[in-house]
Length: 107
Length: 122
Image 1 (cartoon, helix red, strand yellow):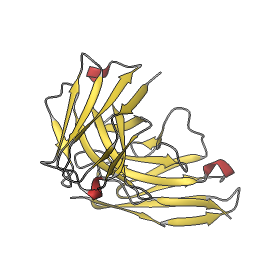
Image 2 (image 1 turned 45 degrees about the vertical axis):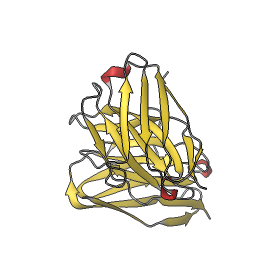
Image 3 (image 1 turned 180 degrees about the horizontal axis):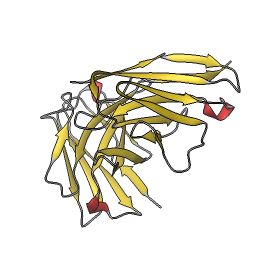
Image 4 (image 1 turned 90 degrees about the horizontal axis):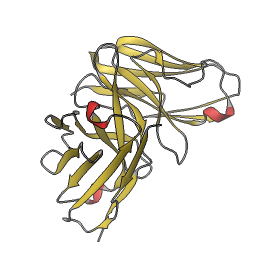
């Protein structure tokens, strides 16, 4: 089965910082990769699908890139409301594996 | 507006069974694949099962294969997960999620329900 490995597992950054989260697929996958945001005590929310397509209503400071084995979620200017755990997921075929998550905190 | 409302979560003894449900509204239920995803307390997300719109094709994580059964009743706009021989490690919040197709024809999870808590303990 394909393994999805996220890094880092946690990070602390200042408001206004650029934040980058990486997701590595082993072996490689197509571009059928999604990113989800889960705020504390809340339901996961879709941010990006097809590696780089922003879901409707998601702020433009979020962006995704990558293909094959390496994918990236970028928050261009970190905001206080972005405190959450972020998950990548490959969805091209079963099993739909999630990464282990990256917890983002404000410094 | 898409709404997914899970129900049926409960405290169950090890070895017991439980069926949880997900009532869908706001979209043509039969046209969309659906999935179950679970999250153990303090842990990450784990995909459990998926079912295509017709109900004829199902998929399972290795961790639940032969133990869980996903089904749907398109006349009732409802998704089900029958869980048998439950173990402590099945304790989690179970989310149902609607899937939508991207331009490649693959199905991502676009809407999630609020979840229902299943606790397996004696």
